[in-house]
Length: 331
Image (cartoon, rainbow, N blue to C red; front, top):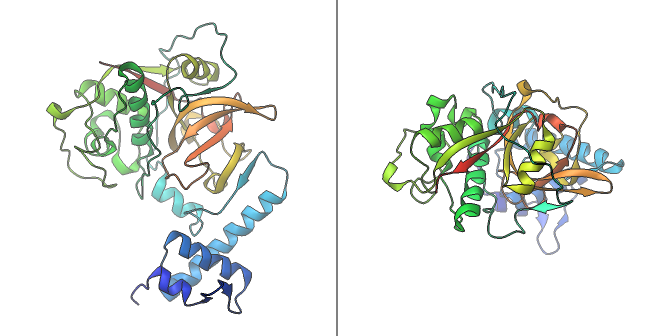
């Protein structure tokens, strides 16, 4: 059956004058509201399947929010997906070897500010981007970090190409839409003479042939700095004194519904072999006595806190201190 327009399909089941349900169960009414909000369309068979998944996710969210937790969940663009589907589409599916046990970052002695946010320090952080249906989070963590360190060094904030990394960085143990690591991507940029801009090498969100043009490179890496595994204080030192830091961690099923607050979990693991997502720490702080990281994600600005989230700091939550890194820019 041909797909119907999400708007027409949704509004046909509402009293358009006041958007009241026409004898619909509450969960289905909310599902049709959500379809309209996210411009979703299904054939009749898939509609029933997605309604069931949405209803289960919504009940999980409602149960979580009824309890006293450090973070709230909410409906978002992933609310019609199972975690199994989400994991296959958006997370790193190739095993990642976050094995740098002894890093090259040298920490100072502090003291450090109680609160750091590189977004508030100047024009040092690019807008939140969306990786789409591709496990390319590692490329967005990489570009976000290199964009920031370049801006801090030069005063000019570039928008850099994730697609170049997807297409061209395989020789450094990266796998395009199947995954990779920021530290390995920084190595690629260092030895391959730079990274082009988004305008010159636009994002398409799937693997294709490498089309890197060195003469158009806009950002360069002089060196790659790994922070010693599990040294979360070293991460604080780097973010407080130098620049934002890329890191990997494990996403579990409750995280995709994150809305606000300080994320904490007893379900995720904290070892290097479970890392399945890469993001960018742009700052840190404390809320109601709980230290947290301020983190830029790559799931668009409608997810979480305008595309950002907070995650508990100081406990290697979900393995976030297992493999963190940043580049030294060549300017």
